[in-house]
Image (cartoon, rainbow, N blue to C red):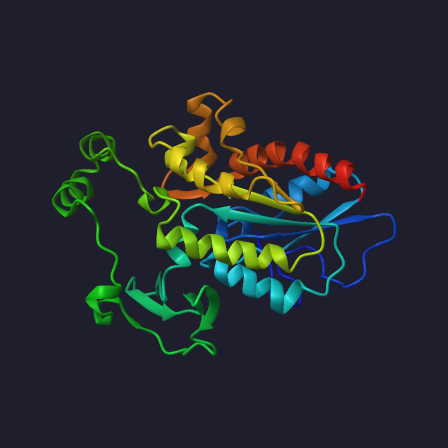
Length: 295
């Protein structure tokens, strides 16, 4: 069951400027994992957290198909003047690819892969510059995209075997699979762009920020090594108004058989059980921040 408010965000409530008396308010940003693709509104971790945290409302600005760059623009457009006590930025770690893309891909009703243009940032003279605004609304087929813009697999021959026979576990053994090599080095240009966007966003916020790198199932189910991603996000530790929280350790406390049920059988989005695990993991950290800042 999906319900939206008048702004078009998935929410059971309208987003108002002034807080309710005696209430705390959290502004939450992320992509489809945060928006709750695949589950009803009330089964999402944001709505579950509102049940767990007394006198707290959460405005879920999650937007499917977006990267951290677009989520920052959503904050500026729709949320900058909204009263709040905490901002949660949930970065699905795969977003490092999205912020470095000029296009994103969707399937239409004919199952054709369609390319949409998007706003994006570039670093010029050590400054972030917003490009492609306003966005050209014209869409085109993936085959029409220049070859330089198409994502290429690192092991195409093996990828063919995997697609044909579904041998995903074999692939990981053969390739020492690392789904996001962009996190390998601190001076990697893809990481530097994502980091710069987050730093700019944080610099414009005068309230506490809870920064949550959300791991893909590859890491939750211990099929890939998370160390590089962990090291990169540690670069945010020690900032005055930022609390960095990586939920992976808490998620791995569940038996691996249960962790597999955190995502759907044929889809990587979190199930109701996955959202429940997220909510239980996030709750103590939110309470810690509220206590620390006496909000």
